Length: 415
Ligand code: GAL
Image 1 (cartoon, protein in one colour):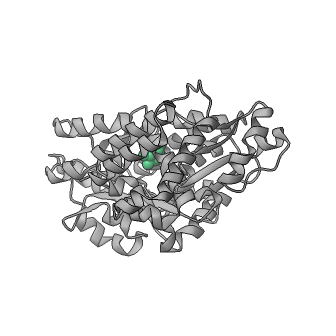
Image 2 (cartoon, helix red, strand yellow; image 1 turned 90 degrees about the horizontal axis):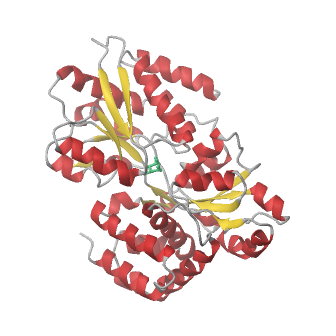
Image 3 (cartoon, helix red, strand yellow; image 1 turned 45 degrees about the vertical axis):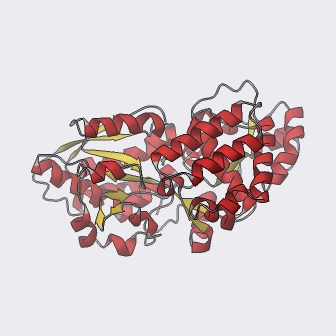
C-alpha cells in the first residue's frame, strides 16, 4: 500500500473509526513543537485525520525545540489556560501535571481498545502510566541512537562512506581536504546531551549504558571505560566547526542534506527532513544506528496528553483524538512521515525505507533496547546534563576529566 493510499485510509478510518456519530464538530487546540519540514508533514497526518472524523484540529505549533515549548505548555496548564491536547515526550515530563490531577485519565479508553496488547515495547505504555492509570497515548518510538551520513559529501571527497563511527573519525582529514566539515551540530543544549548518549552507547556498549542510566552504578559512571569515552568525546569537538552558528537540529540536518558536512548524530526524526528534501536512504544519505558499531535503540518518543476540560463535548473529542492517534492507518501514515517507528507491532510497514527497516529489525530484540533519557531522568536532571554537555562542547578549557566528574555527580545525585 503506497503512502498516498495510507493517508486516504487514515482519513477514511478516522472518519469511520468510531467517529461516525461525532455529536458535534468539536475544536481542540493542539500544542506541539513540530515545526521543521518533516515534522510539519507528519503533524498534518494527525490534523487531517482528526478533521476527517468530524472534529476540528486547531494547530498550536510552538517554534523552537522541546526545551522552548515545554515550559510554555506546562505553564498554560498550571495557569488554568489548558489546550485541548499537547505533545510531550512520553516519560517523566508530565509527572507533576498528572500528580496535580490536571490531566485526563485515558485508562477506560486504553482498556477498551486493548492498548496493553498492541503497544510494543510495553515500556512505552508504562511511560504513560502513573499509579496504574494511563494519562497519555504514545504515538511513536523515536530513538536518538542514529548517525546520518552524506553519501554525496563522501563522493565529493572521493572516499568511501564510513560504515561506523571509527571509520567516520578516520575520514575527517579527507573531508576537510575537500572543504567539508565532518560533523554537523546544532547548539541547542539537548542536542549535545543527546549526541553524548549516542557516543556513550556506540563506544561503551548497551550494558554500560544500562548500568549508568538505569542502575546509576558509580563504578560504571566513573570507571576506565567512561574515562576513555569522555576523552573520545573531547576529541570529537574538533570535528565541528569552531565558529559553528547553527542552533536548530534540522538546520544541522540540512548541512548533511546539502553535503557541506559529512554527518550528524541525531534522532530518527531527522529522516523526515531527508524525505522532504526528496533524498533516498542508501542513495544520497545513509543511516548508522548505534554508530554502526552495535545495534541499539532507545525508546524515546512522543505522546499526547489531554489536559482536563470542564466541557463534556471537549472531553469526548479528546477521547476521539487519542483513539485516532493510535489507530492502525494513522500510525502507519504518521510514522512514515515522521521517520519514527510505530508504537504498535500489528501494522503493515511495506512503505518503510531502508533506515526504518534497520530500526524495525533492531526493535525485534529486547536486548537491543534501552529506555529513553526522558523515561529515566527527571526534567531537572536532564536540564543539568544538557547544560554541562553543551558547555563542554563549546568550551575547550573544560577538560574531559572535569566534565566527567561533574557528569557522574549529577547522575549519582539525580532523584
Ligand atoms: C523530540 C521529539 C521529536 C522531534 C525532536 C526534535 O523531543 O520527540 O518528535 O520533534 O524533539 O524537535
